[in-house]
Length: 205
Image (cartoon, rainbow, N blue to C red; front, side, top):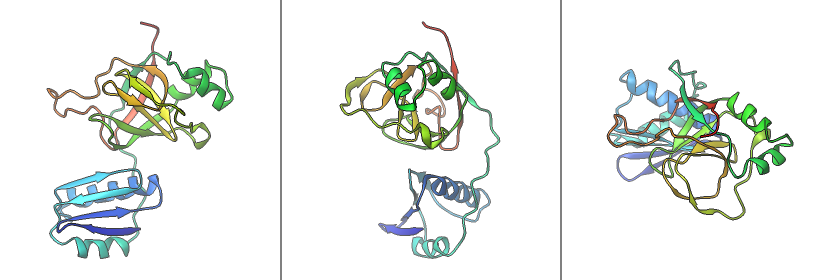
């Protein structure tokens, strides 16, 4: 673990893996909830956690690097179900990469319970983990200039749902009508770090 001061009141903590980042994020949230940490914002990423609004980032850096972070506990919260039509244009390519038939991709994907590791790229976009490493897939060699909103996609170890139309190089395996980002909703984002997610197959539109 390495902790780097950012400006006068922020700290960027680097760890070695996504699991460690999730565990650190959970531990920092616990400390804040119990009044052991005063911080304005805690932002997880793939292998870092940013803390902003600290009174003494140098002291916290020393504490964190000298301590053991316990594994992230399982969050006991309702699972967010996202209905999916598994008819994406890259379904055949993903099946070939996995070494299975096309009909197996929806079965494997829908049988997995996912968790949001972190959010980014676009408002409402969550990076979901849960698939075993053997199902990692590469990004497309040529990104698309426009991926439709609601596209369910894979890249590396992650699953994601495009909250709006945008360029993208992920492998598209399906689509959903679920609204990921709604500025009139509180909170606006359907998914946040730690949210449990399940994809539910539905028939064609």
